[in-house]
Length: 307
Length: 256
Image (cartoon, rainbow over all chains, first blue to last red; front, top):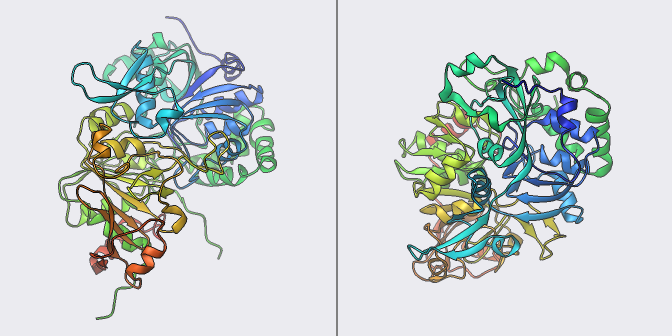
């Protein structure tokens, strides 16, 4: 079997400026954030990003000036960021193009591409202003006569994922929620997966029902523990509330975000250096999950009050 | 009897919980909808089921999730799925009884805007997160409950952008559009509860929170509300507040 293991640097070099991409994960969970930081270090520009419910993954790329166009449903991060700050600032200044769809519509678009179809119908979208602002078309079902919306397949050049386990051949296992990773991966021409743990082929083949993405759909594998930080990875580590709050505060202006990028992206030139910059082993171990849970129940998530 | 001291947020959570019936399937978002559903599960609707759009089905939540993608949504869950299963099989398949929605703007017929304030598409005055699953839940749940901060600017006659369909232009316009699900049943706000008349789908004030009058709610609303059936919102029971404060949100993540 072909060995698809690449270094982070070599994997990031596969993605050129102007590419269309989708990114795995959901709000504060399981994004390939270390890979995104490497794209920023390479000063990639003019990306077209297709997304459903993104958080400070897509927002990071927007703030770093890597993005020309957005097509998707939601950019925020729950309690940490009610509106993704770079996204808001860039859209309000027309520094990035945007086309709005709903989550169900984006799900249908990635699924259509993954299934080799040019489009899929959905019962959502009708009666909304997203119809006129996007490529969605109202249609009448030729069989039942019902009203539906037809949405176009979302093929992308690349899908960037972070998963718990992968083999050198590119077989991927996802634990916890899948989000839309499987459909996004199968909708892309090239899939780059970073993983918490590289495991033997035989180990994943003992429980094939737990594996989600076949090796033939994956082009590069990068073993990268804590590769999603500051986002969480179910069963591996929680999101980092302190860093996500720091991020949201920094992303409020171009000047403060430039300082953030210098401190956490351009300054630390490797993933190891980044992990040191965010607190090193001592901090990262505090994010480890509790027994029997995929997250850390003792993690302090609201800001410490002044004494 | 001395009235119970509780915050507006607590009152809203309890009021929203009363909208949920036992054994219903509830599509919940972050924040107050989670509090309301968890409270309903611990009081009058023990068999109601929560689904989260990111993939968690029927969890036994132990720690409040910060977003619907949070690992905390999987504690004691029946299934860990993904958007494909939730949007296709659960929501579009017609399995959701109640959907909770939030919104920056809500208009006379319960249409919601979570996309942008201002008319310029490529350069809005305020860019909001976007639909997420809101448009989908608004179209496909059997009924929806909207949670909103009650300010006049947030309750215009028409929303700047229609992200999520309510009763569209009132009357039978929603049905005529071919929208599948049932439409907005109630809007639980910081000032009261708005509902819609059958057939016309004109809004009326069902209740105003203690300390306010029906007219004060109307004054903060940009369209005319029928006030003829308005009564004071029922106060929370002591037990409901204790569950909210001690069991559901002891970290005070959402409760203010």
